[in-house]
Length: 423
Ligand code: ASP
Ligand code: MG
Picture 1 (cartoon, rainbow, N blue to C red):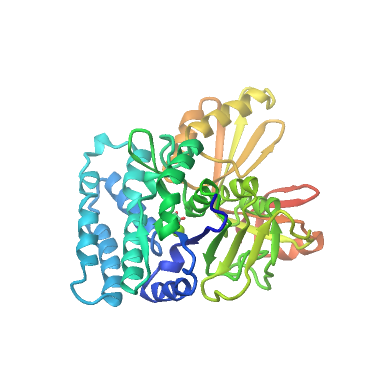
Picture 2 (cartoon, rainbow, N blue to C red):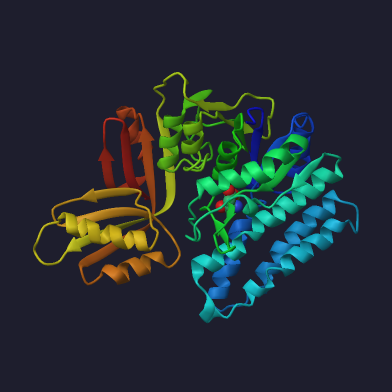
């Protein structure tokens, strides 16, 4: 049992440049009297940059500029933080060299999802290297560990499922003892399949990693450090007059993430709720502030919560043979969605159509249409937004929809959803 262990997760924004790392050091300096487990994401927008490299490679275009930029970005941050010729520079170069075989793969040999994971993991590998070298340089004691040695998954690349038993015993056998002596710093988002290949847990999956490690090590709490004061009732970049929750129930937080609130990764809550481990969301810009505590016994609230998902596509399937929509039609569509690993954000069925709302994903819409075009007449609208309001106040909805064309709408007792496009 390690009921005193606290797990800290630092996302991309909290390690995005040299100033962010200075701040990270300040936060940790006063908090490492007891050993912690620290999980870091890729720095800034590195994951997107790596995705762009892969996209170029698949188009058979030259990606060396994009690849060099990733390298330069990390080296430049290090130039600001370390004295010249510090070993970190060589370590970064050595690490990036190990990606060469993936970059050199002939295009005919590429299984997108698998290669994606082998390449995209470099964001976290680089970040954890730079952060651990920096904190050590500043005099903190910690051990860099490869998350892939304890996070065991299946081979469902890009969306790998956790082998909880194996992960737990690896954590207990390899890390529990080590944590008695030192703080561990590791990567979010990545794991390893039974064949030893790298897997990833889904975009923004580092929060989930923190939860997996916390439950597998029986930790006391998890803290996610963000650039917002805590969990708010709307994204302050998109809506005015937001309000911070001092506390939330696991269930409420889980529902918000299900509808797309990006403050916490959707898979994070469940393992913590099952284990009764509280989750704190705190600001790395104001570390002394209380943030939000997510736990079982939070007081209920009636505050409307707004969640906006951008880059949505509305796909409508129409039966072509003068029948009506039946279970088998829906089943056929869902089977294909499962094959393509696409998640439905909203579903509406009418007499002769099934409409679904999905996140826009490279190549996937074309594949979906291709695979179902003989069974249905298919239309789609791109570049849409999905607005979800939990505990809506009906009188406030028209104001929120001002300036938007409405394409689809759904209301339940507790939720309002609208698919919309800016006019
Ligand atoms: N770096 C990964 C991403 O950007 C994972 C994470 O940030 O949690 O999706
Ligand atoms: Mg990130």
